[in-house]
Image (cartoon, rainbow, N blue to C red):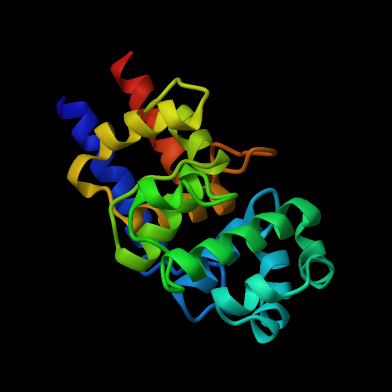
Amino acid sequence: MENKTLIKNFIISTLNDLFPNPKPSLTGWETPFQLLVAILLSGNSTDKAVNSVTPELFSAAPDAQALAKLPLDKLYFIISPCGLGKRKAAYLHDLSKIISEKYRGEPPASLELLTKLPGVGRKTASVFLGIIYNMATFPVDTHILRLAQRWGISNKRSPSAAEKDLVRFFGDMNSPKLHLQLIYYARNYCPALHHDVNTCRICSHLRDLSRKTN
């Protein structure tokens, strides 16, 4: 237990040192609805691609009612750089109609209700709730899953199973800030390919710690 606490404190300290005030990398949104749209578009895409299309998209359709009325072919044309354009266009059209008619234009503030919307999975809903309502959700993407496995926090292969291990490990330190810090650390210091353990502060520390205890 003592070793686990030391490791956890080192991870948190390192993340706070490297990313003291992390901000969401999705930009250009001004309302909760627009953020939800941007997060949905980011699936199987990059934040850079999403940020390149949202100015035009939100200029043409700034709210749920306007997006529900936007012709599907025009919606597809705008968001096509994000990939899976036809599927995402259909999701956004149906999602916008439901939010406009059922929720008065504002996305619901619960994981259960959000995940009932077209195209909104647990990860999308969790990211949304963390940013908008500062809820201590822990959406696990491929970056965070990689860290959990390399750091010995979880040996699970599925994000949902690893999420439980991560929540248990970080405990009351879990926060939207920590979630962003982990993503940025994975991208910048602990990539999937060409990972150099010697320049990865956390992995190298855990390696050295393991050598001392063996």
